[in-house]
Image (cartoon, rainbow, N blue to C red; front, side, top):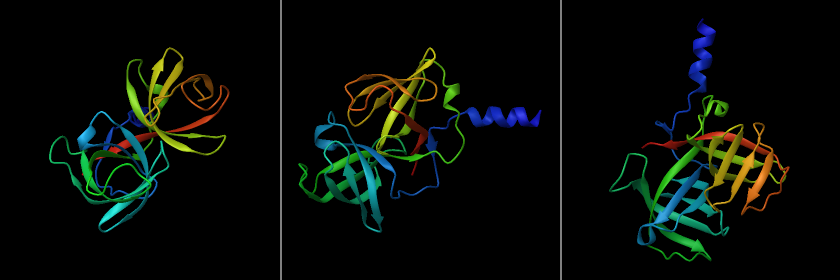
Length: 187
C-alpha cells in the first residue's frame, strides 16, 4: 500500500518551487515593460551579487541585468530586472524587464499522467544537437503537443518524445527530444 501511495504522489507535477536562487542553466520567460506584447526566452549564463547575464534564444544576444528583485506587481513568481548592458542587443541600458525564472524540476514528475487539456512547463533538449529550450506540453489523445516559448513552433510527439509532426520549427520529423518538467521559482 505504501508503494502505491508513493507512486501516486510522484505523478503530481508542482508548478512553483520555493527556497531556490537563480543560477546558471535556468531559463527566464521575459518581456520589456515598455512592450508587454514582446515575449522572449533567455538562458541564464552567470549570476553574481548584483545581477545576472543571459543569452536570448531568438537572437543569441547576451544581456547583463542588475536590480533583480520581485516585481512591483503580480504574483510572488514575477520578478523584474534592468538592462545594465548588452552585446549587440536592441534593448538599451535602463530598460526594465518583467520575468519568470524556470528550473528543471528536482522532484519526480510523471508527464505521462498529464490530463488532456492540461499544460505543463518543460525544459526540452533535442538529441540531434543537445540544444535546450523552454516549452509547454499537453496531451492530445496518445500524443504530446509541445509549443516552444522562444519561437512558437509546435511539435507533436509520441509518448517517447519522438517528433511526429512539426509546424514552424527547424527540427525534423523523427527527431528525439529529452523532456524534463520545469518549475517556476517563487521568491
